[in-house]
Every structure is written in structure tokens, then in C-alpha cells.
Amino acid sequence: MAILTNFPCSAVTHRRLLSFYLSIPNALQLIFKQLRVQGFFLGFFDHEKKVLPAIRAAAPLVASGALHVPVAAIYPLSRIREAVDHLVRGGKILLEVQKLN
Image (tube, rainbow, N blue to C red):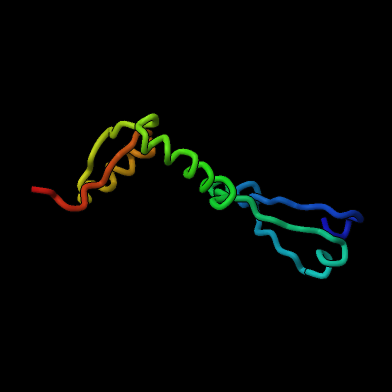
């Protein structure tokens, strides 16, 4: 791809779509042709620019009671697999790390 491109561009790759690992035999092709290769992972979130502002916006709503998500279940650590399965299906869960008397 780098040899065929004569203008600045970006290549975004996703491993699951490729049947081979992406390799760049000559990194100078990226520098002198102003190319950029960036991996893409759907599970990667931009915490600093997206997640933190959302948390800051939601915190006062939670504190005031305007935003409330009910707890669907409380699991002891001994049932962690079941708790994760529940979380994946949806619903707020809590893990009990110490039994209170």
C-alpha cells in the first residue's frame, strides 16, 4: 500500500478482518510519504476525552438522585463467573467482598 500511495493518508487495520499480521518492511515509506498506520480495537475507549467528561457530567446527577440505576443482584466473590455472566447480559451488579454483620 505504501508504495502505491503518493499523497498523505492513513491506514486503519483491524486484526480480525485480516488473515495475516500486518507488517511494514520499510518504515521509511511511512516517513517520506507521510503515511500513518493505526490499529483499531473496538473495545478501546478514549478515557481522557470521552469517558472522564461523561463521568464528570453524571456525578452531580447521581449525587442529587436524578440519575439512579437499580442494583439487579449482589454476588459474593465465590460466584464471580455468574456475576460476570449477569453483567454481560445487562444490569447493575455489586460484588460482596466482606460480609457485614
